Image (cartoon, rainbow, N blue to C red; front, side, top):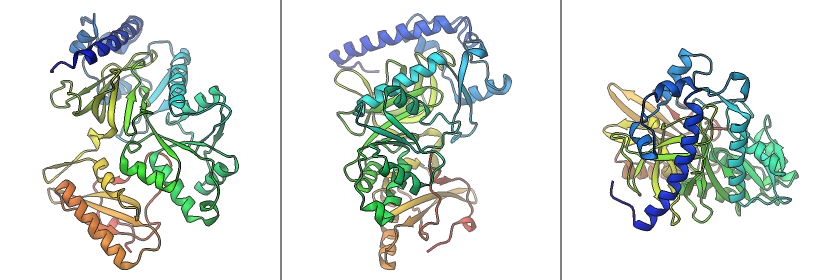
Length: 437
């Protein structure tokens, strides 16, 4: 790998030394007590961060699943006796095999510390902001740590689980909520429902910030523009994390569309999935995470399947340029072309006339085809719908070098999502389509 500029290399060296000090302390604690890592790392020379990268094997989610199957229900990746764990959460299962996850009091507090930093960077002010959480409060980690961190920081925190979208909007309005934490998809849906109700549309809102997470999109210009058009004057602040590791990054306050990695809490590599080598700044690769402070269920060189573009700030901090652009396990190969769902969404979201959409994989013999279903906004005339259909097909063909047919559905035909959106339907049948317009 070519060397970085001298000044940047020196700044990175300072950060990496701090990361090694924390990782070494974690290893000293974990190795004698954690069966999973004691066996996996036995005999390996791990005397520096470079040796750690060279010798520690990459960890896949499949390996975690197999460990849970062998040692149910929580696996052998437990550093402490089971009575030391106080919190349970579960991965969303969007890539299959949802996993239960345990945290000790100290690990949970560490994640709250991360969220306090994120809230501060988002510009929240004590005594000024009221924070609303419209998530389901289920077993997914979701915004649980954000909710508790906001409470610990002294904000007025308002839960919105179990409400309809209209009821949530009335709650946001009546209580003077200034910050909403939700997925990018639900931020759009809240705006769409608001726009469809004259009383809500004309109301005076105090909302000033949407903190979005849970799925890619918050750093996508098309998605961000869509949310900000639905919520004039509201700032979109992106964040991303994983149940398995906790909060990972947050939006650079000085540069929209770029995420700053929480390098005090994670050692992050961005690698070429084929070769396993670190990519150059400006290149895309798979994000690999090592937790530096989550002792109870640590993950070392964990392959996240998240695709990101590597960058650095002038101070040497690692950045994800453009946020999380997609997932390796979401990519599909269509007639020799690699297609990521995020690429399709970026095109669809350029069209304000599209309220919701769905992509269906349809197999014709040995060939996989894609079919885009769109739900238009109310009030478009037949000629406008025809033009929209043609423009979308043209944009998709130009951007992806594929012919993807577009079908226009009746308003309200497609589902809405509160947590992670599921717009990509695998192995669908043509006769399963919702009612066309």
